[in-house]
Image (cartoon, rainbow, N blue to C red; front, side, top):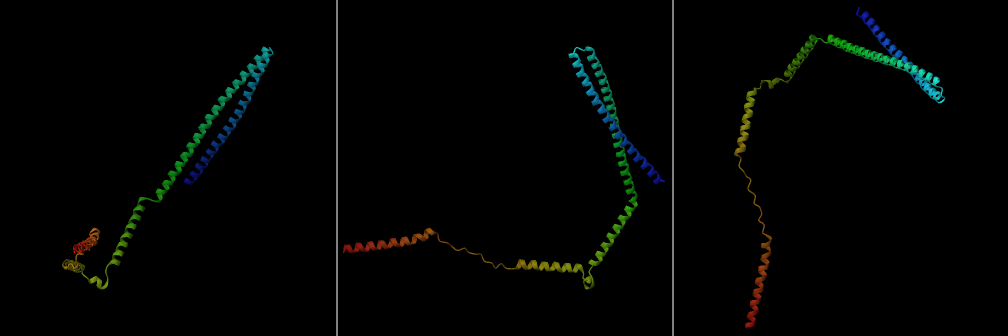
Length: 224
């Protein structure tokens, strides 16, 4: 039954859209026709003005007035055509707005239907069931990993407390040995460097003493 209603309403919606498009096309054609008529009447009105000027120059007042009367009639028709065009523009704007509104409502209705279908395919009970299955699988995996990591064979008989106590004793013995070990490293002595100034003064003092000895020997020879 819903399929029948969907086909009926879908067909009516398509027909309404086609009707709106046909109406817009008809209004556009009518608007173009009115614009052409308006341009033609404007030309005729201008032509009557030129004729009136020529008759005025020719001193034919009666003919000039007739031209002005026809110009007024053309202007009235131009004004009437302008009103027609304004009404057509209003009608086109209303149709376009209605068409946009209809398309917006259709889009919203389509989105709502899609969301409703998604909610039907995923209800809260299915989500809870899925989460429970995931948690059960994770718990099973944890138990399997615990079983695989448990010690097997002779290693399973070892007492963890005894092993930790033995390790603590070993660490204490190592620390005690480090504290009792003598320090054999002697302090290093840096070599003593003699200043350059002192090294250079010793040769000069020796040379001065030799000169004094030579001078004393010379004076002794002169005294003899």
